[in-house]
Length: 556
Image 1 (tube, one colour):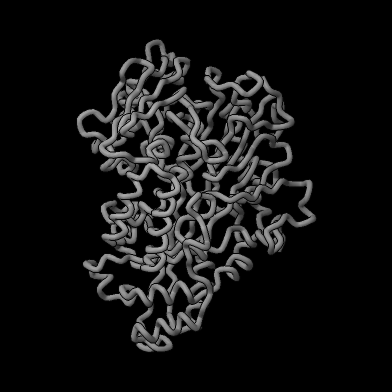
Image 2 (cartoon, rainbow, N blue to C red):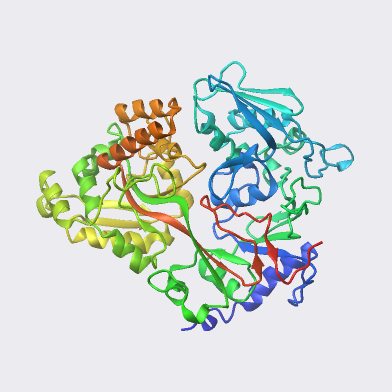
C-alpha cells in the first residue's frame, strides 16, 4: 500500500490543522495560498512541548522552542567552542573560582503586559542573578536544579556588580562551568513576567531571543514571530533573524509527520519513521536516487548516546531478586548482540555502533584505543553466563526490558539475538512519560535510555555515574568509590590533557562494570525542503534558525 493510499482520508484533517494554524497567525489561509513575501519555517514536534519555561528545558522538544525565545550568557559554536551571547566577554580569577562577565548593553526583553506600557525593558546583570537563583530555588522545582549542585560558593554565588557586570563564584574549581552556563536552563528571564504569571509563566514566555511568543495551543500549534529588536547582526551587519515566523505543529506520529513533509507543509523533519527509512535511504545511509533534487539530506554526528540502562543499587529489592545484579550477566548482554548488524538493518547506518565507551564520538576524550567497549562475541557471552552459574542460560530467569514504542523493534532485535545465547529478554513498550517516571524513581530494572549532551564536555556524560548525583542523572544508581574519586579529581584538573586521561580511565571503569549497554553514538538525520537555506545541523542538535532563510520568501 502506498503512503498516499494509506493516508488518503487525512488530507482534510491536515488542511484543517495547518490552515487553522496559518489563519490565526495571519500568515497563510486554509486555501494553501500563502503570502510569499513572508519567510515562515514550519516544523512538527511529535512528543509535544510540556513547557516554554527554560527552568524546565529537560528535553529537545522544550530546548528547541526555548532556544528561539531566550538567550544565555554564553553559547557554543558549530565546533563546540564557547562564544559570547548575552555576555560580551569574561575573565577567570587565578584561583579559578571567580568568573566575571561583562554583559551587552543593548539587549531588551520582549514586550509584555508585565512591563510598564507593555514595552520590554533592557536586560541587566540583576536579571542574570535572578534567573540563576530561580533555577536552584526549591520553590521553582526546576528539572535543572542539579546543574549547580555542590559547585557554588555558599555565601555569594551570583552577584550583580553593576548593571553590566555579573560575577559567579565557585566553591572549588570546576572546568565545565561555561558549559553549564550555556544550557537552556540558564536562559535569562525577567522577574516581572515570572512573578506576574507564576506557574503560568510556562505558557507566557518572555525572553530576549531572536523570536518572540505569539500563541500556543497545547497539542495543536505554537507560533513565534521575529523579534524586531533582536541585538545580533550577521557578518555583513544585517539584522537577524531572517525568518518572519516559526510555526510548530504537534502531529503525534512520525508517519503523519512524514506525510506532511512530503506535502510541503513542513520545512524539515528530524529523523523519519522507521517504516519509511528504506524508502528514503539506502542501507548505507545515503539518499536514494529517486529523492535527489526533491529533498535535501543532512546527516551529521551529534552528542547523544543510545543505551540500555541497568539498575545496580544493591539495596533495592528489585535488584536483589534479579540476575542483573551480577556483573558477568551484564557483560554477557553487552557481548551477546551484533551492534553493527542492528545499525545496518534497523537504522540504515544512521549512527555509529557503540563499541567504545559511554562518552560518544565528537568529544576529545573519545578514543577507541584508550576505551575498549563491547563487540559481538557470542562465545564470550556464553562463557560469562556459565561463569555466573547459568550455562547456556539454564535456570536464568526472564529479564524484562522496558522501552518506548518507537524503539520496540530495536529492543526486539536485541532480545532475539540474546535468546540465541540463552538470555531470555521480554520486551515491554511503555509510554515515554511512564518510563521516565519509573527510571527517575528507581523502579525500572532494565530500560532503554539516551543521554544528549547538555554541554560539550565528557564530564556531562560521566556525571551520569557519579554516585552523589541523584536520579536523574544517575538513573542506574551506579556507585563506585574509585570512580567518584577520579570524577572529583578531574574537576580540579586544569591541564586538559591530564583531564582527558582521567576521563578515559573513568569511562573504561564504567564499561567494565557494565551498568549500561551502549548501543550507538547518534547522528542527526534531517530531511529538508529544497527552498530552505542557511539551516545547518550541529553536534548538540540544537534547532538553530537565526540565519535560516526560505528561498522563495522575501527578507524585510
